[in-house]
Length: 112
Image (cartoon, rainbow, N blue to C red; front, side, top):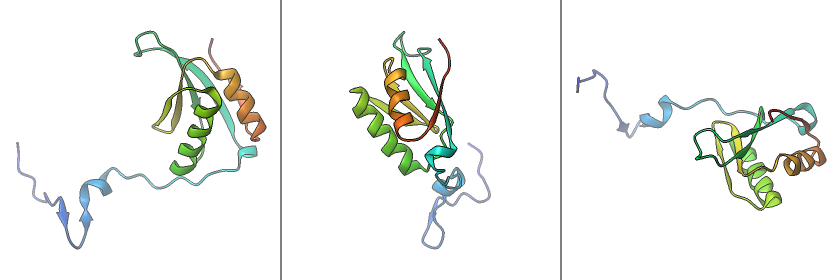
């Protein structure tokens, strides 16, 4: 393994440098009536089991997790947030669409 010139991982003055390298600037949440959400269904790489994906949300990380929790409760299913996309286990696009529309989002169902 080659030695790098500046290999500081932690110091009392700069904190944990590893966390600062990949950090992206925080996203500010847009109001729900200004957003169009796309619902997709995907099963690739999941052993044939489908998931419903909620894409193109402009929400902060905390708001994204809160919305994911609400959608999981509505669907009675598990899920997660990965790379700004909410994944809900199973085919629940219709339930998710109805819930998001009640919250004021514009919803488009994509895919088959």
